[in-house]
Length: 285
Image 1 (cartoon, rainbow, N blue to C red):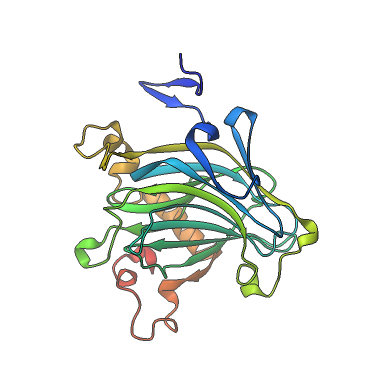
Image 2: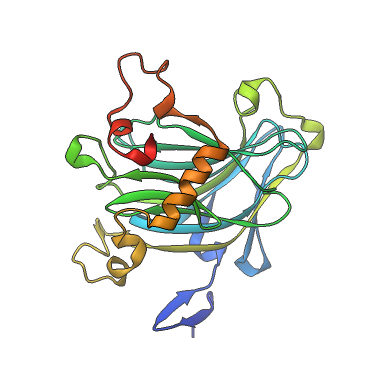
């Protein structure tokens, strides 16, 4: 008997149904992060005094994480909802997906960044082509030994390949946990900080459900995939070295039609030359 989770048969595999009570700890917020429906639904709240956030109980060294999120409706200017994986310390690794709020009727912006060995500065931004506040959408972070990919409802919006052999640091050593949070960043989040958070509309809420984690669980100083015996190493996302043709075309469509900032195109920011990876992967240029 398993009292805290429902077991679902999926082919030859057993999948644990989403349970935020089982899978996450409330990290901060003093009661502003709340779990509902017997662990199936989570809400994060933000008011003028505090935001809120959660962290996964498990850490992973390579993972594919899916989360369905419904963002703040109406005027969300100044707010940031974050979904990311990260480690700690001066040489931390991190894959950031941040949703920058906006005035009612204006599109949300997704701000992504990748930290390797403690260094970030790899920002990209796209404007969403749908309303992320009217219903739940699936956001995916896939991190394998070969590439990082970020997806929206199955459409890739960013790829960062393992180019360590060419001198570009990659995240191969530190396990990372999963985080989601909601906080105030009106000093920069909306139009560079020109639009401030309207606290008369607080509390702001983000809703999350259908969390799914597939990955190499870190435990007792080692990875469950260390010796190649885990089923994870045989899954497509783990073995994938690059996007397939149709996914590359979708990524090109996103970059051409919805990207509003790319560090690899910001030569004024890098007067002595763009970061090395910008010249190595044609999908980045």
